[in-house]
Length: 124
Image (spheres, rainbow, N blue to C red):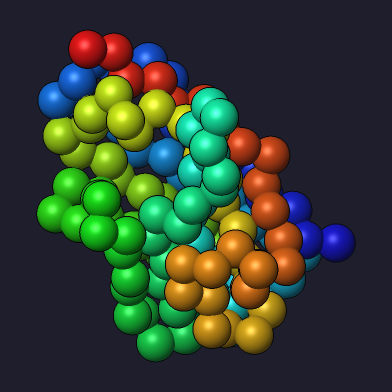
């Protein structure tokens, strides 16, 4: 059974930084695509960033390019999202996810397994 443990959410002022981490178990991490998604109050879930672990290719939503960085450690089965220059519009519940096909990208429908979510709140 695939499982994630997410840590790193919290409250930060605009312009600040946070780092989210997901520790994975129960699947072959280095063969999956992994991603981060978020759901803001009253809005639909959106893709933030993903990485294809087998080849290391990363993709980002336009809204976070230049501010967020996704990374993975296949040996430790861990993925991170470094978030810099945070804005109030970044406030959301953030989810890590994995796609068994290895394709991933930023489409939630592609992903098989999901973390429990962690709250990120950015104040003005």
